[in-house]
Length: 178
Image 1 (spheres, rainbow, N blue to C red):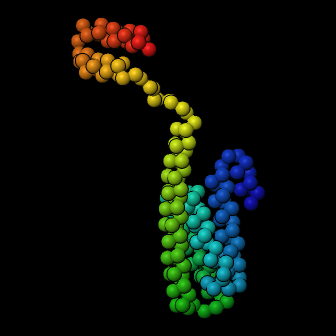
Image 2 (cartoon, rainbow, N blue to C red; image 1 turned 30 degrees about the vertical axis):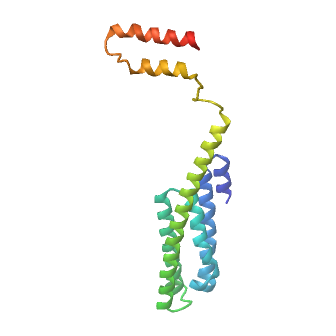
Image 3 (cartoon, helix red, strand yellow; image 1 turned 90 degrees about the vertical axis):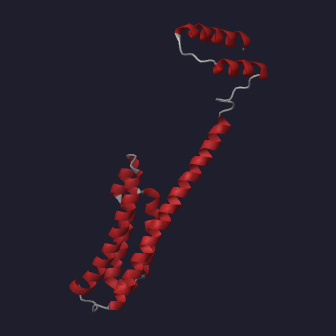
C-alpha cells in the first residue's frame, strides 16, 4: 500500500486507487483459499469493488479487471481443489462460480452506467454554473434599430473587391452607433 500512497502523491490517483483495490481483492481471495472457499462471505465485496473500479477506469480496463477477478476466483478454487486438497471438486461450486461471474459482469455494467451518467450530470451542472458565473459573455444587448441595420448589411453579398469598401463603411457605421 506504500506504493499506492506514493502514486497518489505523484498525481496518479487512478493507478493508486486501482492498486489499493487489487490489494483488497488479493486479501479477500487469500482468506477464501485458506478458510471457506466459494462460500466465503468476503467474496461478496468483489462485485462492489468492480463498481468502484468502473468509476475510475475506462471501458476496456473495466472489462480486464472484471475478467481478472473472475479468473482469480477460478484460480482460488483450483488451488483449493488441486494444491491444498482441502475439499473435492464439486459441480455445486462451479454453479456458484457461474453465478459469481454473472454478478461480477452485472456489477461492471452497472458501474459503467453509473460512471457515464454521473459524468454527464457533472458536465451539465458545471456548464450551468459556468454560465451563471460569466454574466453576459457572448450575449450583447442591442437596440432594435441597430439590429435592423446589422441584418440588412448581413444580407448584402461581399463577393467582389468593390464591396469591401461597403464592409469598412459598415464597421465604421457600427463604431459610430455604439
